Image 1: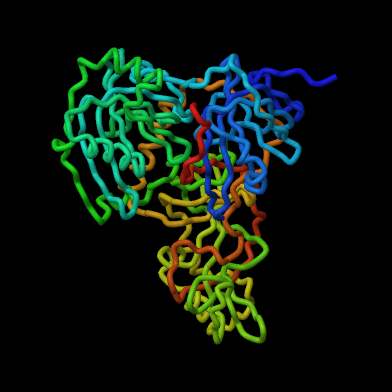
Image 2 (image 1 turned 135 degrees about the vertical axis):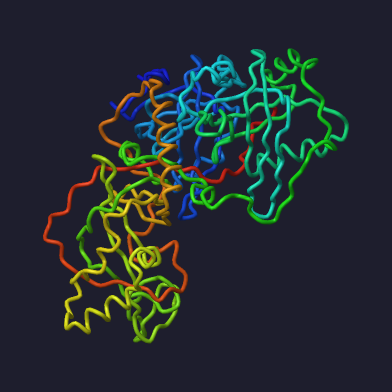
Length: 509
C-alpha cells in the first residue's frame, strides 16, 4: 500500500520518508563562498502551513528543471534538519533537504492557493509583534521618499521611503542593491505622476536601535519585489483602499544622489553584510556566516602547528616544494619561505568563549612586528625550536576588540577578517547587542532536532592559505608551547545570506 499524504506541520526528524502535497510559492538560487550554487524554496500545503527546502549543489542539475514558482507537486523522501537559518523564511521548526532518492511529481492541486503570501501588517510591526529572525511578506503604499542613492558600480544603491497600509500606520522602508535600482527604474520609467503600492516577499524587519528607526528592508537572499501589479490580489486590495490617499510622486521630484564612491562610514563598512551578534548568540547559531562581535583575547590556543607558517613571498598562501621549486597554490615561485602569522586565540565575553584565528596582517597590527622579525629575534637569542612561541606575541593578549570574522562550523572557530580596537567601535557593537536583547524577548516556538545536518555552504579554508586582509605583506609566524590544555569551545554556527539569482516562473502563474 502506498504511503498517505502527510501534513507539512507534522514534519519532524523522526523519519525521512515524508510524503507531502505542496505548491512552490518561492524559489531562489544561493551562491556559496566557494562559488557553488544551491536552490532554496518555500513549500506550502492546503492547510497553508509552510516549510523551507534545500536542493544541494550536487543535485541542482537533477531537480532544477522540475521546479517552478506556482507549480504544485507530490514530493517524498527527504533528509530532515533543524530550521537553523539565522534568518528564517518560515516559522516551521524543521527544513527539508533534497537527497538522491527525493521524488518530485508535478500534480494539479487546486486546493492549494496559487498566490499565498505571509502578510504581516504594519500595525503589528509597529507594536513589536514580530520575530526579528523570521522573514515576512510586506505590502505597503509609498507616502514619502526620503533618500535615493544610486551607485550601480558597486551595487550599494539605497532607496529609503515611508510606507503605510490600511491601518494608516507609517513605517520606514529601505531597499538596497538591485532592489533599490528596481524601485528607482520604475519611477524613472513613469514620467507622469504615479502612486506606488508594492509587495516585498521575504522582507526583513529591524527593530529601532540607537538613532535608527524601525525599518523594513530586503534580505540579501530570497527577497522578491513586486510593484503596482494589480494582478496580485494583495496589491490590488491595498491599492483600491488607499488609492485616493496616497500621494502621486513624479520621477522628476526625486533627489538622486549619484555616486561612484562609497559614502559609508568606516564603521558601516566594518559591519557591512555581517550579523552583529554577541558570543552568546553565536553559540546558538548553526551555519557559516560573517559576523561582528566583541571579545577579549584571553590566551593562545595550541594546536597541531606553531604560531606561523611558511608563506609565499608574493602573496599570503603557504608554500611547498613542487617540481624542485618552492611554490604556492597560485604557482608563485619563492627563493625562500616568508614566515607569516597564524595564531589561534581564545576570545572571551563574559562566560562565553570562542576560538579566533588571526592572520598575518592583523597580527602585525596588534603585535607591532612582522613574523619574520619575531622569528629572527628568536634565532639571534639562540632559540631554534619552531614550536617556541615568542614572548612578544603576548602583546596582542588582554585586548578587547570589535572583531569581524567568518564562523566556520566544521572547525568550531571564527576566521578573523578585520578588527577595531577603539572605544567608539566597541560601544556601537555593544549597543547593537542591547537592541537584540530587547527584541529577543519575543517568544519563538521551534522544535529541536537531535542530529543537525551538515552546513550546505563550504567552510573557509582551514589552511594557512586564507588570509583575507593581507596583501603582499612581509609578515609571518614562529612558536611556543602552551602548557595549559586548550578548552573546549561551544559549537557556533550561522546561516549566511548570499546573492540571489532569478528563477523561472510557471506559465500563467
